[in-house]
View (cartoon, rainbow, N blue to C red):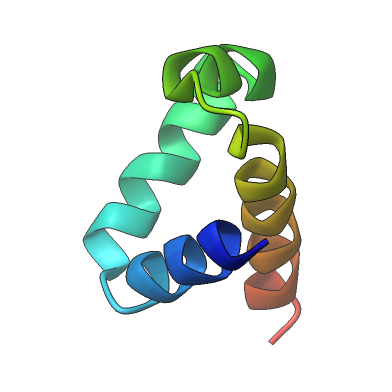
Length: 59
């Protein structure tokens, strides 16, 4: 969970990176992105990214 929190913090401070990540998620799908990360924390990071994106859209 700490990895997901730090990841979101880094992405939140870099709008260009955020746009690129969400574009990749939409184009390639969540499972492809999870395989790309190839890390045990990937599902936590992706879940946090999806929640973060929804929160940003609702602001």
